[in-house]
Image (cartoon, rainbow, N blue to C red; front, side):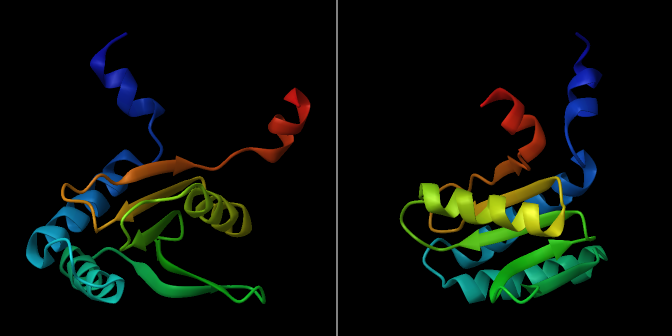
Length: 132
């Protein structure tokens, strides 16, 4: 397999690379002990500088759920500022993907010493039912 083939299998590689870079920049500027809202404010400034269209604190229908960012209406960005990401955090992001019909989400825990954005791909519920 050629090295270029791996990029073809990634979902939105260029956009997710820009978003990840903005996350690293915000994390480097604020450190690891800022609040989630401060990271979101810093990311919003980065997105404006990079001319990346986004929606912040987007309400999902009438569920009362509000996600942190939707980038170009294709990528969900969920920010956490807590000691550990839990399984429930992954489930929460997966529900956001299902509700918005997006394929990709980035889950970022800014409390980590070294930022490690996690790519979460939407689970195809129809395909999953066939195998269960």
